[in-house]
Length: 184
Image 1 (cartoon, rainbow, N blue to C red):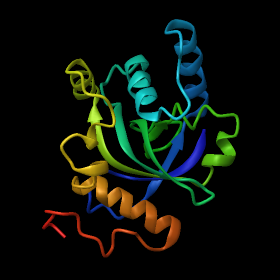
Image 2 (image 1 turned 90 degrees about the horizontal axis):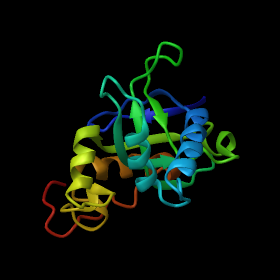
Image 3 (image 1 turned 60 degrees about the vertical axis):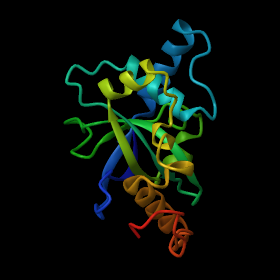
């Protein structure tokens, strides 16, 4: 388990809370995916990998969600990213447990993610994710109908703003208004 910080999807949520990245489970699912589905998880395919991981995850409560957002690595690198979240477990604490099958399975995951912050933009329940895939949509889903890069989606834009502010102290969107966007 790697300790990280996490911001929820709500645009007004300003409080980070502790979370954990389950790198051991990420590596376990990667081995299963490689053995059972041929290609397994792919480098630079976080959205695809996360949707596949959600489908593979044993989640009897249905609480796991596919998330699209941003990660600020300990080095300050900001990555548009996809992952799976589920509620914290008694042994991990009340913060969410993050299953990052793209970054979390890397050999340098601890170095890359220790001290990282996950800024969730949009979360999709398992059923909603499965329905979108069945309809032929490809992740990231937030890009569909929300303008270039999904930035017309308020919570996704807020997650990007938060990530950039954490990384640089300022967001590149502070003085930019998207065409047709009157929400400010």
